[in-house]
Length: 428
Ligand SMILES: [Zn+2]
Image: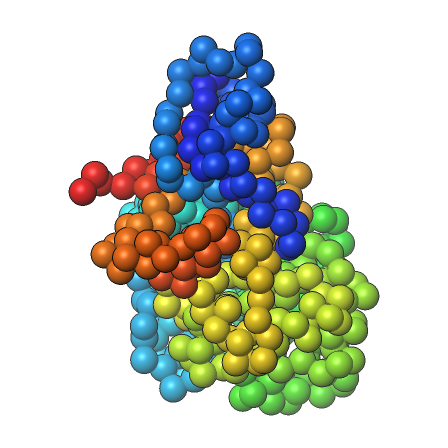
């Protein structure tokens, strides 16, 4: 591969207020898959003018989406009709996850899972695997072939889970260490310390998760927090000495600026303050929250408290791999809380904002020079209704708004990872 040009309507979101848009824009991608230059075509430096160009015309060229909370072993179990979180977990989820002790099953699933991410324009993710090392090995080995910036970890759970998915505290610690040794820092891969949530971990296991984080400062730690009232009640019973749910994780050293807490819907002001002062992130998963009836996350209240918030699909509690559909649901949940997010804010969350939550914002998430060329091409007129709706769009803001509200995987025309095209929509 040699240096080349990507042409189209170039759009990225350097902060939550800004849409950087070049109607006729260009990105120069190096042979090594990094962005050398981006901007309006008329300002393209002469030395790049003769490079081979992939011209996407009027299509929108944006940074790849980033999904900071998704479950690989739930890749096909979307729309399982649970009554609530705990019923959904025990009746459907654990049985499906148990299959990932079989490495052949895990390998087949990893190919499908990562292909689905790419077909939805998602170029990076932070992923919960199952409790089996086989699932992590399978996922990382395929992500490595795709050059993806992928973060993943073995789910740790030693209590309140059936045979087949339950580990022990010591085994989860040893497995995590072996996986860190094998994968962390290999190409663009990073390991994440992954206790599922306080309900399925003993104090000993959470302590060992804290030890892993202490031994690997800056490594992502991902778990769930305050998703559902029955869950919160169970945690209070299991950890009677803790002040609240957040304090359970805090007491084991699990808060901090590389810690991701999925959901965080029903937090007290004390908990929000503690999350904010430790730099901990909340990952909002709106399609999962509405599907499981978990509650309406208050984006504005969390942001006002000083917490950095990411936006994720939470497949398979979530109902769509599409970050466009996830943004639309996040928008609706915010509106139900009386807050109207801006268009730049939602797209920024799904791209650079999520990258910053994962501490990879220096490498991906926007078109700044030196970053990896993780790029998607979108057609805002992919369906009949979108085509008619776009007849009313008078500016890029409205084009992006209606794309967010009406778009899904059909809007994704191409996905580039580190400069290589890894997905291309069938030409209709
Ligand atoms: Zn989750």
